[in-house]
Each structure stands twice: as C-alpha cells, then as structure tokens.
Image (cartoon, rainbow, N blue to C red; front, side, top):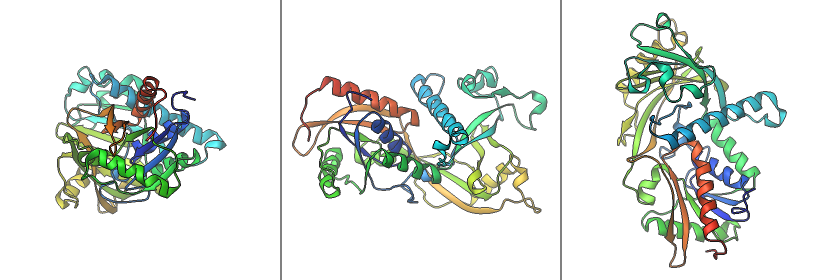
Length: 368
C-alpha cells in the first residue's frame, strides 16, 4: 500500500473506462476515492464515450511512442490475466465482459508499421501465440497477415464490472454534471461543494480529470476533438476476431460472446460531431465486412442487423495528456489536478506515480 496515498481523498472526474480503472488503482493504493460523473455505467448518452466502443485491444502507439506502448502492453497483459483468472478461479467468477479470441489481422498494402513484415510491428513480440501468415494463406487483395490471441471488451458488461469493483473498495459515486462556464477552477469548486450533500466529509487532497471528450470545455483544452466512430451490431458470432487495415481506414469484426452478437466497423472521422448514423456509411461497413465474416450471412448473403451506433472517441492534437497541474479553487489554496484523458488503461499507474511524487514533495499540506 502506498504510504503517500494512504488516507488521501482523491476526487476522480469521469466514470468511463479510464476514470473507473484509475479510481480502482488509487483505491488499491490506499486512497479514499469519490467519483463524480455526468454519465455512469448503464447510460447510453452520445456524450458518454465508453459504452459505444467495439471494443478490442488495439494499440494506436507508433514505434516512437515508448510510453504509450508501455501503457498498451500493460492493458493487454492485465486483461489477459483477468480472463485466465475468471476461467480458473472461483473467486473471479464475476464476468468482466473481457474475452480471449483468436485474432486475424490483415494489411491490404505495405505500411510503415510492418516495414519488414508483420513480425517487425513493434507490438508483435508481446502478442501471445503470434504467427505471421504465409502468402499462400492470404485472401485475394491482402498484402500481409498475422494471427495472435487478442482480447475483446464488451463495454456494456465491463463498465458495470469496473464500477462494482470500485464500490467493493468503498468508492463513493456522485452522479452530477460539473459546470464548464467557470473554467476548471469553477468545476472543481462545484465538485467540492457537492461532497457534503452525499455524505462525504473529507477535504479534497487531489483531483483526477478523466473527463474524456468533455475536457475540451471543462479545462478547457482546444486540442481535444471528437473522433467519430460508426459501427453496426449484428446477430451471431464469427469464427475469429478479424481486423483489416487499409490505407484509408480499418474494417473489423469483433465478437461479443456473452450476447452472441458481433460489432462490425468502422470509421475514424476526426472533428466530426454528427450524432446520427450515416446510411451510406452503414452500407459500406456491411459490404466491407462480408468477406471478413461470411459465416454470419443469411441465405440472401446479408447480415442480420440489430442496430447502428455512433460514438465519439476523444482525440487530442499532440497526444494524451497525463500530467499534474496546480489549480487555485474557490479563492483558496492550490490543489493538484492530475489530467488523464485521451489515453489508455495503462496510464492509471502513471497517475498513481505522479500523485505519489506530488504528495512526497508537499508532505504536510492542508486540505481544501
């Protein structure tokens, strides 16, 4: 247990995957944690990013992004270990929404990521059961391919699972929207004022800003922007999790074993706020995915479509922001705020380390 965080009260803003996982990490280090969020697991609001994710483990780090690589590989290993525990230990019987699947990854053209073949991808050595496909095993129109064991995340199950873990560690959840008109200081002042009404009597030692796309207005951070994704949910599960990289985007087939459904995708439309599905995009996704999962087609050669969904992933010019700044709240003393948005699961441990370092330097300070 961390001596620096033991007994500290930390308020986490945001209850998406990042906010909840960070809350759990801080709780396990001995902190007292209150989560304040406009949206919580079970909500389906378009502004709540996490429920709309496909989702699968897939790194966005380049060969130069060493820290993000570390976060992504940690996510992969932690999720894999959890899946194994669920299958083998009664104590881990609660279903997390995480599943291990045989994964096939295709590239339709040469790419810098695989300059010397799939084995040269920076992430290849970390994948379990990684194997490069022989040219004779590639479908028509495919330049290269590989298989490996991958993790899928059914966020409709995973988010409540994370919240239940946080609550089991005695986290407090406050469902409330913080104002953005007064800037970050105003939002933090409102957060502090909310606590007594929910029976939280402790002062605040630090905040974690895991507000995702809302950081654009909350901080405000103009570098944050939406990345629009459109997906199609269909009936049935395919033989494999399949992803196909093209120079103009990705196609993917992501199984959800628990519900016997599959997510087809997708799009990556930067700075696009359209909330309604685009029928032309839907048709394009369905056509592109037919070759990836022909076993899901009916006698007419069509998928059984259940829904078409749109979500906004937070993007950020310049990459993820994970750093501490001091913010003066309500005319009082400055309080540390650890920003953590546009990033991955593995960043939670960096938040832990940054706050430990901060409290080490400020030992003995007063609370708000």
